[in-house]
Image (tube, rainbow, N blue to C red; front, side):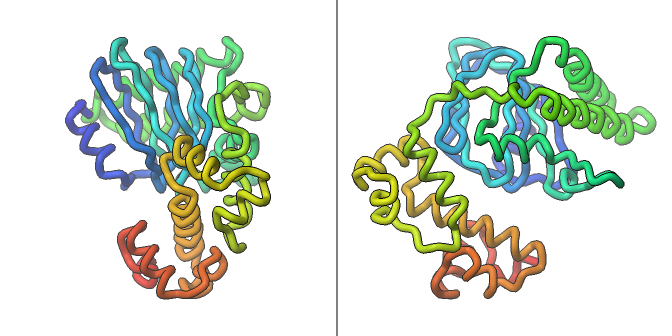
Length: 283
């Protein structure tokens, strides 16, 4: 896939395949707003000067860092365009990651551990990289040979091997998650509270009182860290949670109240604004 096609693919914001892998090296000015996807993303950072902001935390990336961005996780990259920026990017669908082995093992384990630790960047011990990077190089080579026999199987084989190795390293090296991110502790605590209490009444006054902080200071710091107001962030998280519930078979009217909305009309209006379709038509 060439650079022009890659830009268009990212611009659409959706994934129509089980997974998609890219290798990109560029040296140009790029600015990204805070955003999220309904698919999962892995970045393997090769070189450059990049700060990755994820759910209120900022990580200054180092060569060989892996970044795990879950579905509906708010993030953006801040890039210093004075030096080349090289990275591998993998997009993964929910359905693909949710597949399990007979023993119950899932490729989503690495993302679950990242969510649990609230840290999204990993740096493994040096000997862990040879096989994983070898798989990325193999995927890159196979991608360049689209018309060879069994191309799709070769690509999927290399990709599955990479994901197995990544998950094994996450399990075997729990301390690989980087804990040196820069963040405002109160903002991160508020984000965690919102995510855990979506069905409850939440507003800026309640949060300010609970976390012993001026509501105006919280509003300013929260927007600076996430790009969203508290109210916008809360709506985004509630709607995305409701979307998953509906896709799992829950009636929209039930999902509405399960996610903290007081009336269905407000829920339906917000849902259409954010998702782009009415909740009743989602399935």
